[in-house]
Length: 415
Ligand code: LLP
Image (tube, rainbow, N blue to C red; front, side, top):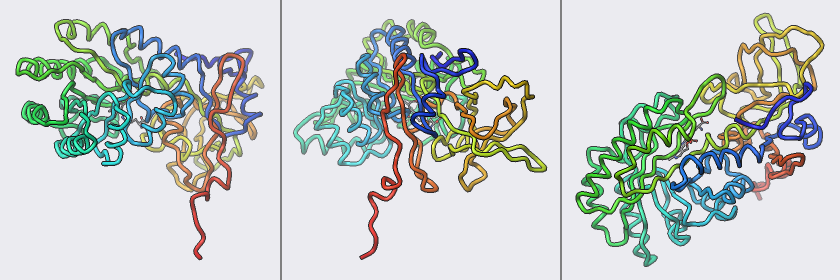
């Protein structure tokens, strides 16, 4: 759910018309609803009151967003030193930070150890050995979980499916017991959990439960063999409604998992990203031109794949709504909505039936709060968009629009 809705033909975010934001801050722009964000955080906390909930920072890493979540008792699932820096700057406590990723560098491991984060989700034995060495050098102990790959098909887009045998993530179930016993013997490693994440934008409960049963069995086996498993980190992955999907609610997932948790002396950790942030944001873009070719009708907008990559990268569907409804009685038309970038993959929608649009109209690309701004780039030397956070009838710029000077600030002319 979210707090974006029409009132008298105008699309609002909470109590602010999106047209007003576009007029005042310009386009393209990301607009987030604080009320939606807080609501989603609370829904997770209520469904899983005992769990440690760590927001996947990769979904939306703006420090205002992370700070708002931290105030709601949500920690951070990080995958880089950069995300660690952001999370700490936003006020996330180290004891609420978990660190995943197949390619953690030594400096990133050292930074996380110095901050005394809650847990490393370790993805290989070489990585484990490096963490052991760095922890020894720093005269500290690293708390870890091994990320296991349960070989479960998440039935999602192949690019965001991570729990299959052929994926690069985690260690295989076949060697898990042996690897855990190896980790257990290391002097500066404290084994405390099991981690797994099978994929993203999951719309049914079954893959979660299949994976959880496998993790549960491993936990019981490890505990019986004397390894103190106290945390089960089931990653993120809960999907959202982009079009007509009906993903499970956090409470439904909680009910399905509860019987499997009962006899385990373990605390759950979850790493939702999209389910918390996805529907909290929209991407505003302005119609520059309309153009009719023999084949098609195009709407050329001022936002592009560098701003919101999901449609071009995964062929993802995002609902697109005019911020001002067209009440002129014009017929809807089938259009391609495309950006100015010099690639045919630069589109937001193809063959989409849309209300008639004209030069100057503002469109809201919905469900852009997760993996929107964080995946943006400066391709085609386009300054990155402004980010805005709405709070009831107010809004605040939480990241200013990049300037042309920003584009070249780290570059040098030859001497
Ligand atoms: N934990 C781990 C270890 C992950 O790899 C991910 C996402 C998450 C948690 C959060 O998953 P979520 O709850 O957001 O599904 N760029 C893609 C999504 C990539 C997800 C990568 N890992 C997209 O735009 O769909």
